[in-house]
Amino acid sequence: MSTRSSDSGLVLGIESSCDETAAAVVRRGREVLASIVHSQVDEHAPFRGVVPEIAGRAHLRWLLPVVDQALERAGVGLDDLEAVAVTQRPGLIGSLLVGLSGAKALAFARGLPLVGVHHIEAHAYAATMEHEVAYPLLALVVSGGHTALYRMSTPTRLDKLAETLDDAAGEAFDKVASLLELPYPGGPSIARLAEGGRGDAFAFPRFAPRDGRLGFSFSGLKTAVLYTLRGQDAASPPPAGTLARADVAASFQEAVVDVLVAQTLAAARAEALDTIVVTGGVACNARLREVMVAAAAAEGRRAVFPRPAMCSDNAAMIAGLGWHLYEAGVRAGLDLDAIPR
Ligand code: KG4
Ligand code: ZN
Image 1 (tube, rainbow, N blue to C red):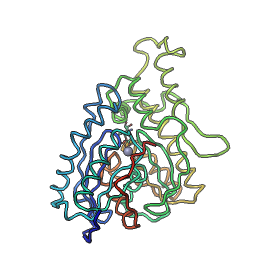
Image 2: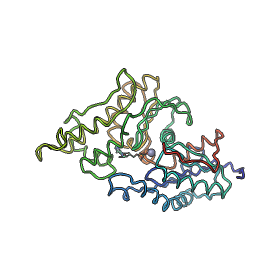
Image 3: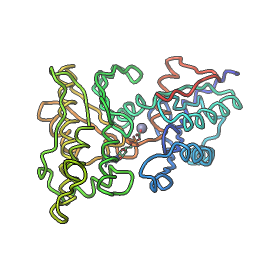
Image 4: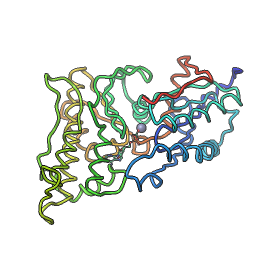
């Protein structure tokens, strides 16, 4: 591969790890010139979850149109780019491969440096693109596939402090939405239904690890919702009309929010970190935003959230973190592998 001398600071980012096909052009890790996201939600909705085979095919269909649109909107050509950054891990293997193959082809054809990006670390970085933050800070990444806390020392240095023992928070929203027969994706559906319900109607369990350690678990909560809706043996539902679904949704949401906020603040105290960034699809949740910001402020800490479009999957965060990796000298070869975990 030839090396280029462009110093435009422009990075093309490509994201295809799950059910969003996305491309973005970002200058020097921060200035978003274009960010295009093609969501496959409509294609997966009938199955109440992401179908890997459908996702892979849809990425193939949408990758190049989305890249073209990002370049056009940014008003730049491939020759103006300084590097190509692509999500390498984690994600659905067939989906990751589509983005990686496309990025490699572009890099090879134009002699552009290629950088592989970790999707979760890019979510954490996204929050720092929109807010002035001082490092080190605490990052909570809370999405459909991940729920984890990191000590972030620089844009490229993250140390994991805790993660979920079972389901991710977004996965719990999606599964409980399915129990409530709400449309996929479950997070926004539950949040909407919860607006008309009482968050204290049901005392759902709040998981906390023993010995004051950090960690998350949502599978017990999901089971508690199942029992509430269908009875202890999951076959003797309460009499029709006695159960307000909005109350179930609101109480479930309240339990998830409580656990996320309690563990995040415990980590902030333990690590003596005053700045907290919260990102990932679940960070779109208005109740989580409200409670986290207030609870952090009550302790003299600051919690910041990116705007919703930067919380859920996008390629601006890939191009953004990709710039910092590129600046640090990271280069991938054309043998760069997709890693599902
Ligand atoms: O970050 P993301 O777009 O994809 C992954 O990397 O997983 O997150 C998607 C997840 C889904 O589980 C979705 O239900 C959840 O984020 N989500 C929400 C909300 N909006 C999206 N969860 C709770 N409240 C929301 N408003
Ligand atoms: Zn994600």
